[in-house]
Amino acid sequence: MLIPLLRIPMRWSAFTINETVTALVENTNGTVTYTDEAGNDTIIDVTNLETLTEIAENTDGTFTYTD
Image 1 (cartoon, rainbow, N blue to C red):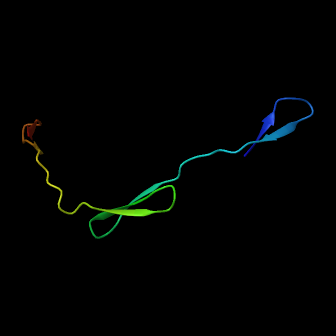
Image 2: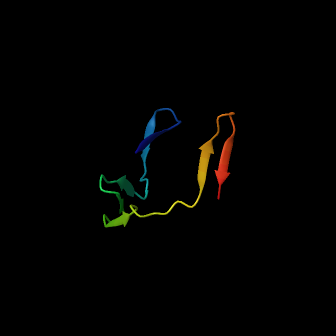
């Protein structure tokens, strides 16, 4: 990346941005693939996760939360 230094005449300074690039992708089969900085994939199976709470909209404009 180049950024201008605020001087006359205009000069440019180069520098490197070191950032960590990872990815999290939802697959079509109920899994999620995490790709780390080195390009290694980890597949996480989320098909059998249990939901222990519930929220329901009532007919009077309120909500009921059950834990």
